Image 1 (cartoon, rainbow, N blue to C red):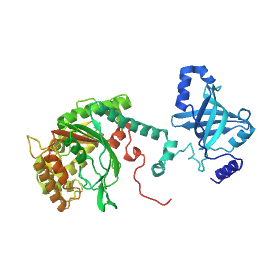
Image 2: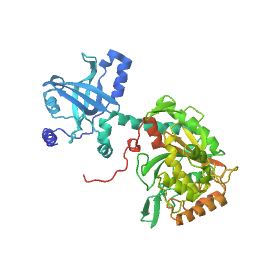
Image 3: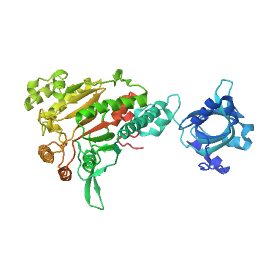
Image 4: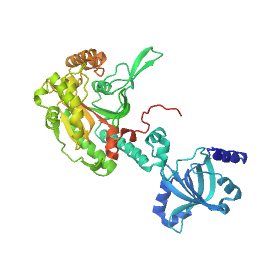
Length: 485
């Protein structure tokens, strides 16, 4: 860094601005390569104005080869003292790997066949005062990669590809839903009541209004208010915040796609989800099968559907006699060394905990789990055939939950009773139980048409499509413990 600062001071003394902003680019690297593909040798007749970061530099006295990179790719350049002039070449000798430069010149092929920009002008656009990581070893320490993601993106091509693919996945979802008349909307991130899911929220305070607010744990109740208001098909690509643990599949701040469809059931959404995932895979991957952590995932349907209790019996080894026996379930969990908080936990919560530990890791192929107990589904419609369960599903792929959807509860009387039961569970110690939302009850009293809704975990889906085992690999800036610099 001292050497770079000395070079910067020398350039300043020569009247060279270190951070100019008047250089104009005519071609990106991708456009230059397209020109080569289209015109062949004729491409050498076009004068190009290009810019990027120096990522490799080899000097031979009166000439130098360098590689520069912009947001679209990398290209070689050839700089000669006679080509740009002695004064400019003297300034160029003070440039370093990591600096941004602007170049003008024409393309030619070297003896090895590599297309190269023969520079007639080279200008410094930004002097980098810190050196890039050593290129042969790159940036491998996970903590450093996540804390300094800008270096990770610079040094690791695969990381860049993951986030380019992530953007394509989100866009593919948007296109799919818009083509089916869904309207994209935005709902509040700060809410007076944390609702729409069972989770612990982050709390904040609004000074001017003098009120406490919560960062949203889900947009569900606001999106359903829009269905009440006459928007029959809505969706939101939303950021949610949950004040919970961090793991390879959990980050306190995460992205979901959530959508609602009037005059539809959870059965309709399961069919739509199969179609949607296959469509997104074709657009992004070009195929409907891919490898994830050594397993082939095939999205071609139909996907199997299995009830929660059948899954626990067949895959989790749970005796059906215990399904409604709280003490028996707790004993079973203890025998399996699965920790379950006794306080405020009813049978449905314990069954869900056992499912997470015993069954979920086995669900590698796309599988719908259906018929969730009412007590853990406070916003879902009861099943007409069995009032103890709801018309709800969760989708599992690669041993992880990817989506959650259900036929919506639109009976305001039943919904209020569910909220009251949740409040009772909260008083018994269940901190994740749902709060009462009187305004949402009021909205339902005005009438919500039969509706089905679903949330899809974007981060986990990106993990699948990019074969990443940790959620931190697919979030640009994951939450990390603060350390001294």
